[in-house]
Image (tube, rainbow, N blue to C red; front, side):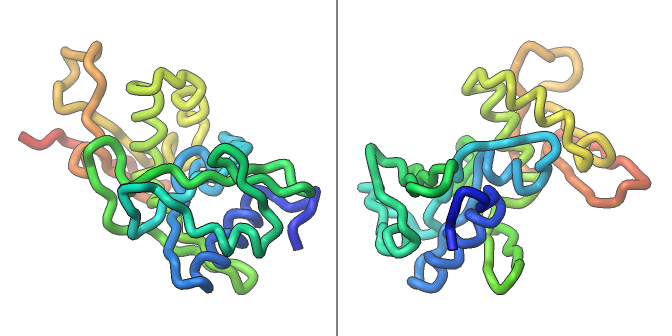
Length: 189
């Protein structure tokens, strides 16, 4: 089932479905989500799943991972036949202080994948750039076809205060899938 030729996308669907089948909801975020949305622009080597209902102690129910053949080492799950790793960062599901209460669910080949929305994914990658100083997240972000066609981002601070990191609240980040027109985000008061 999982082997050397398993893609990151296939693995994401397998892991999420295994947890769904066990009665747990995990949501893909981070670079793995970026890779699902824009594989030509972003390549991650790991998957970060956040439990929809998380506990403060961060304990992972790893029965589904073990059933898939993964072993845990230092908080990271690895598979002997697969080059990708899986992690379960502590929740809650959020970008900065902005809680994420909804996500997308994709279905493929009888498997399911709960994944943050494309808009939240853009917000997450920008947050990694501004707060985590991950410059590669910014560079890869602008290669996204969705972003270059139809997403505009503007800061609360407005155009004169570019030195400050922008706000990543949903009101300030607007995304649309219509390729024929651009949407301009207007900062809220």
